[in-house]
Structures are given as C-alpha cells and as structure tokens.
Length: 87
Image (cartoon, rainbow, N blue to C red; front, side, top):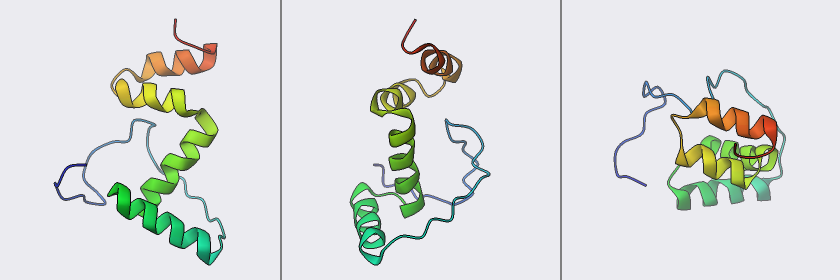
C-alpha cells in the first residue's frame, strides 16, 4: 500500500464499474472485529476489504488476479469470465 491519503470521493473509478449498490448484512460482533482488524492490516477501509472478500468469493481468486493485473483491459476480463478462461 502507498502512504498517499485515501478519500471517499477521490474521483477514481473501481475496475468493476460504478459502485452504486449497497448491501446491509447483519454480522456478529466477532466477524465485525475480524473485518476491522484485517482491513487495518491491509491498510484499506473495512468496506473495501469486505467488498474484495465478496468479489473473490463470487468471481474467484484467479479472476481477481486477472482484474488486478489488467485493470484497464476490462473487456477482455469480461470475455474470459463469460467463456471460462483466457482466449
């Protein structure tokens, strides 16, 4: 992680598209504390950490690595995901 400040409205965009939807998920105190702790270790806000964990669960670690490796090549990632692998 960089030491640059992070702003809620930084003007940057998420590689997955516009983040306009929200999930309200009841969790135990233990799970909340774990998310907060691991987000702090990763140096990211807890919402960003939780979103990353959910994306990995939904899309798989390999797809996440591809997205991180080629953040500007979203069209190809979408094709890979839809076709079950790289072309």
